Image 1: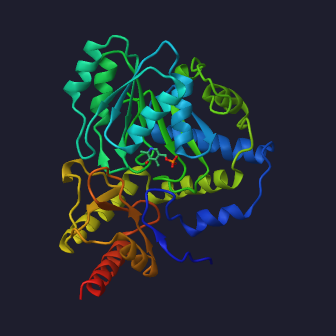
Image 2: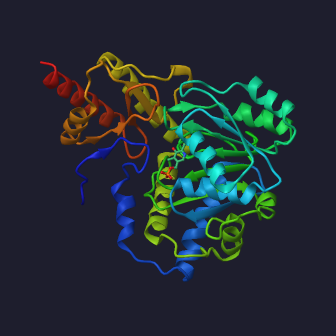
Image 3: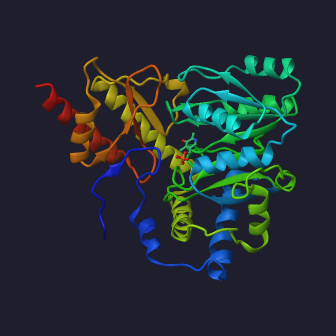
Length: 365
Ligand SMILES: *Cc1c(COP(=O)(O)O)cnc(C)c1O
């Protein structure tokens, strides 16, 4: 069987199982029932079941990467008369603000530093001071730093003020237990190639069926989620060419999630990976940048250990050892990131730590 030259310790695309990769050896026809009814509709129903125990929710899949889905949500759910409050503590929150600029969406950003959790009091003050606000959007795990935002509390507060809540759960959905209905999330966005461990090529949006039927605001044809949902909800058909190999691989990835024991057991594995990683890195002299109470189980940012630390040779040496890590993305701190989601197990983290120790010893004899 094909063995990849290295493990991806990145927040997506990530390391997938050999059996997920293997499913892509078949071609599928986009208007045949084997594809639409059997594969696409099973995926849509499974996603809803993973998102909530409540009734009345639906899912829609969209070609492209996760960013396309975020933009499609803004296009489709936020109208010209509406106003969006953006909770921003990282690059993905910042990207949402940029999308709003492009689209001319009336938006207000509540901005924090990248290792800071948004304050509920600040959010409530925004609602009180600005009665025009109709929607709120927040990133769950800000992959920029690895911080986990308290979206259950944020959405509960937003609902108490009658706002529509949009959540970018790109790098968390499928990797930790959450229930959209209990957490008051109206619209949740994620993608195939993160914690659900599929390959890249499409994202998806989960929401109340009653919301999608009126989400008719899109000023873009290809990003119109209402139209995509209308085509998909009866026949399973995508409006334009669907990424068939990616979709087939995703079905296999969902089966493997169930075989692992579902989201709660996957979360245990990720938590175990992350704890081993941060403890092991600390012992090697690398400090995590997010405080342990706010740290997600998915990706961790580490400060450069010394001022003259050179990331490039470090990266290349680890690649030789069979591991791909990720550059940093924080605006004011030199750092790099290591993801521990995907087909990654504690023994992989142990091997990574041994390799980092070896590389460090070689570079600092
Ligand atoms: C990965 C990710 C996205 C989408 O990024 P793409 O490169 O477009 O897939 C959006 N938000 C968050 C928090 C992410 O981690």
